[in-house]
Length: 312
Image (tube, rainbow, N blue to C red):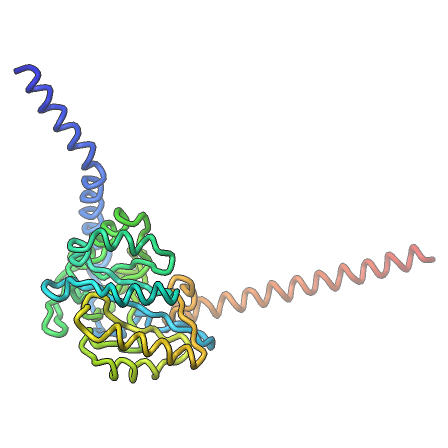
């Protein structure tokens, strides 16, 4: 009987030790929800859509580069799939890409996620805990009801953040909501949680519904710095065939493929606040450069005078 009691106590201790990180995570998110509910309680959303203030949908550059992004949604049924042929093609061609993965897809494909995260061609980013539009008041997009409060916005972002970090060892830098719809305050909260909100300016496959020809036609509209939106969770679709042909054409046009994180500081469009801050920064740097130039000229003149004295 005594041994049985000891075994029970030992089991309880083991469970507590094993779940320490989970307990801390729960405590953290509950505190975050309280803090953000207080911080944003007076903020009323003024914008709703795919490209509201703060959403990044391109890389600001003149270079012929393209960022390919692939979503894995995990809404059940076919949406839980994995397009292995598509990913194997990217690997064989050494094409980097940014993968936005939802918590629901991870639950079905955990081992695949871990394998993908170990490949330096890919970075794993956040596609939401429940794959919902990001809203403070339950706005819907494509028939999908969005988050309905500040607390739900925090959960949608943060719960999948910690899941990805625990499985891959890397915290996501970027967030993309289910349906790619947001209100402007939800975007502010995402930024506050340390994640830039990423959308696209080339609709690559329309939720994996495009035929091969449509995928190719869409791809050739690319401009320097374009961000493409594709899906990697629908192997029965024509995404692989379309992407394969599109990449051949884009390479012939001189385009190279990049990961978003490698151009983090060039993600646009920039907000007015960022433009203002950068303008002040540039002006300050100009003043510093002018001051350095004046100091250099003064020092140079002193040296010349000193040389003249020595020569005499």
